[in-house]
Length: 512
Image (cartoon, rainbow, N blue to C red; front, side, top):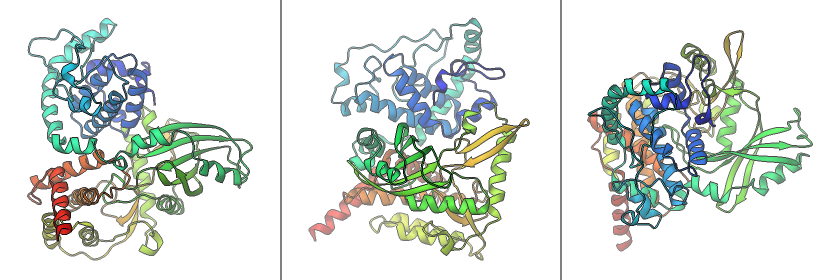
């Protein structure tokens, strides 16, 4: 969680060193490319908003300069969190540049009235420019040590060229100004991360009551993370009166109703519990689900799930874990899941499909009637896809990455202790698995993101937006819609246009 503070270790660089060189090693790159966006966000915002030294801008620029899609997505997360800190008054001496006045408009301030100067930049070689990702000052990237300074200067010219190209790549994946403004002024349900931070700052009484029914009293409850959901580490004394007498558990309050991975759409505690049960039956080690339920909160009735706490560490935390070991762990998971085929009745309530055409047909049912162009494009792709015989459906985690694997080192090798975070699991054909290699499946998953974005536009037009992190889901729509446009499968439209069409159609129906 606080890797921004981590010190140099044998064979590895500190975060400060990585930031200065802008040239991460293979191991560092693997560490950064994981699902560490929330960790980076929390560490940066919590530790640096008070000191106002521009670290958020430094990190955002560094991520974009790396040019990897995971890095860009993490930069987007950090940008949103920094905007939120600005709106809440957390960053006073680190204003954005004039190119990003939306932050201050949302905060009720006019940037033209801001007299605070941007921080001075470090002297750079001739021709060096720092591409500002979102209008944040980059601050001083020089290190105190001479060795770090020399590394920074020796790599500055090469990082400059890569920064320029990656900046253009990231902007092509970003949201247009109108769509971004809509997302950031969306109804509260579209900013569930903020709602959870404000309104679920304490463990809900409904969860406390359910734990008490099992003979336990809460001795401490620590909020670990707030994003799509609110995750707590809870100690109980006396322990739970169950078979394993758990004295420490993980409690997850499910804020979002819509997931961020195609082909999954919806999230519920029952789905997560079923996915973990199927994984355990297949032979994978997963945390025990102690109980599920729902609890009243100031933002409505939310599902919750209480899971076993496993003493381990994520692969994400193991900075020096070799890439080969990571791939071996991933292969071990997929091999285990492939040994346990599923039928729809076994998988329910999880989404289950055995062929590409089954999935595309399901997507067609989700396309709003107000957006016929998307339905036509999807129908055309369905007609182009040759029919296939139903194969075996297997459980697919969909988000196997180094932040969701718990592992420990045994005799110089990494042992898989557990797989966590099953909220976007579905049952699908073996050929899809985690890394689809067939072009048609890559196209189908891109259509999944597009249909989800269209569905959200329709729900928002009807003032019935489900709980979600809207901006992140719209980013997924934008990236996938542009990808389909390049493949000549779909005519690209900004998400704001979809919303306008849905609202216009709804208005026309009301007038009739």
